[in-house]
Length: 181
Image 1: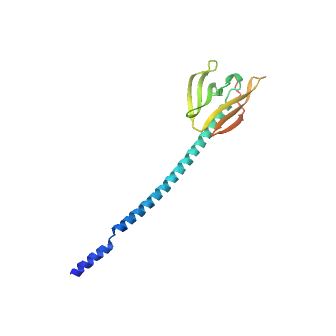
Image 2: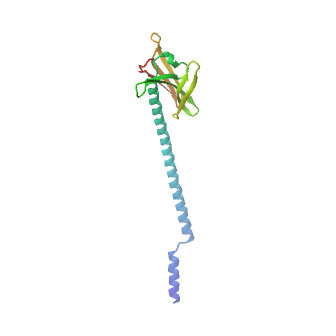
Image 3: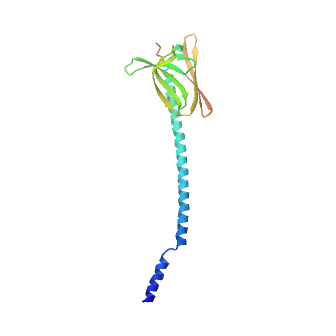
């Protein structure tokens, strides 16, 4: 009987883990967990950086498209352009075919690129009412240089110069808005 109890105790002891084995297991699992979390963190940071770059590219494309649309609807009269600023009058037909106009101003602020539009008094150079759109696309400077035909008094083209990430970009756009008041 004693032998049987002794064998059961020995077999029970041989099936259990020692403190050293448990410690080694915990150390190995901790190291593997740290490696896995480090890899996950690097992957997450890489994804976030790519996502941020992609969002900035999308915002830049939206900015360029909206700028082209604004300049396409810009008034061709030289008097509808405020010279040192990037402010100009837009003229367009609404859904009913009635002639409408608004002023548009592009500038750079602390939040990024700003597009303001609404009612503007060019003589006093002040806004009577406006709305603002922000584009965080990395543009740090923007300017317009309209080319004016002095015989007709019309804007023939507009050179847009903007700086983004320490690179300067330039494009010439021809307004094709034929609505002249």
